Length: 88
Image (cartoon, rainbow, N blue to C red; front, side):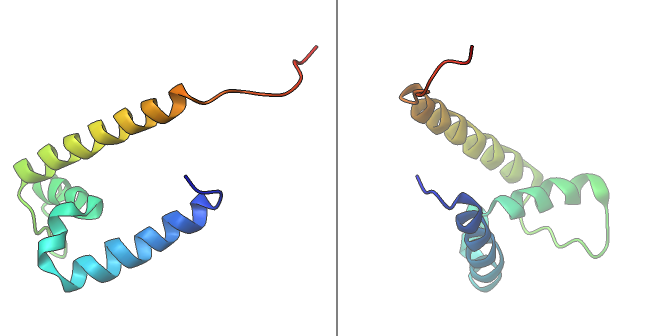
């Protein structure tokens, strides 16, 4: 999708995961970092860990996003072709 995937990933983390989800509580349902905190909060029992989502919500949404990512990645890789000279 982009030739600068590292830059796009860093912008995603900075803007979406940090800025928007900390300001707008409704966006926490769409944040992968919040799913991690929800799962870690259930098992870790750390007092300074602020988990905003329940364990069931975190697991279900993690599975949904993982399934969507696998489907999209498989779809994109189907049309991928290696070109160039064959190695001798």
